[in-house]
Image (cartoon, rainbow, N blue to C red; front, side, top):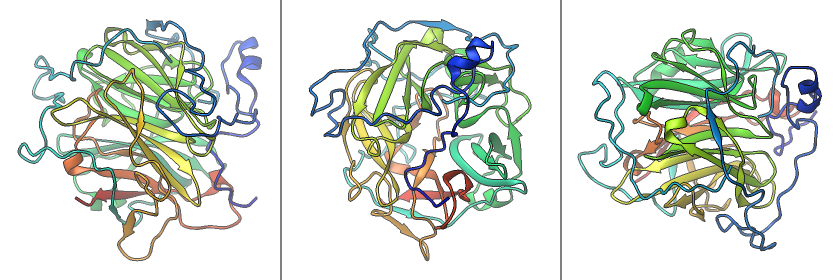
Length: 411
């Protein structure tokens, strides 16, 4: 099997979820069906410019807390919306009730003494080489989630083993990127594609992931550095989805996800109901399949005015990221740096120290010094922990030797 740049990490030819639901256990939803192609055209935030249609499947959102019964075991690999009445007019708040030993939400100031840096319209990055190889028995490290807590990087990630099976892991926390190479890689609960946040309203760490007992699931802990200290699994979303993420403002939590079909979807719930189960997703972006492929992430941009950043992986001559901005998590999105020649991050705007070791800038996370539910990033100090792969022929997507690399924005 030759390398196909259009391959997804989605497993091939697993049983359909509908069949296994009839047999009492949830499994993969839609993994064997060909991903549907979105309509080609210009992305305008919430409407397909060619078709003139509005959001798909509009409906009133609902939610319930807790999700599935925690006794359901994670034995199957799964695959893995929205008209909101809540306003985004309030900036994310500083949670004054959180103790000094816990992360504190604060999106009002910059990390460099108060200087405010707007998001650029053209990005330029420098890249490290590979930062860490997978441990023995694993082929790849990918889909990184990185937060800084107590001046240490806490990194969760997907792993791929020699049988091309997915799992999750975390690295022993480290203070400097040069230490990532020797950080111990521990198996962690979950299926793949983790997102780690500290949820300040309930003073709890939440680790979210796909391909558990639901399409998108979560576990909780008071100590994210202990990979064996997470709670039983609960459901966040059930339905066709891929690379889900959650970001909250002061009133509402929003789920965003892709499905390898040229669309980005959204659902929401009141912040008091999170973590709970999301329902009724709607389409917020539509384009051709490979222009909005997978690995979407959504962030609050630190600064004096309310702004949000979405990045989505696309496929061209290599994998790269497009970017979009909004002033309301429940509103429409506008392109920022959103082409292969002017990407958010891709080979067109990345300079390597030495020979370029990867043709792909793929699934990862902007480094978050504030680990809370706002997923706040600072344009004055942007770094992106991504997955890259050495150019290799004759391998399928899940055989590729993905490793972490770090981009640093050139100011």
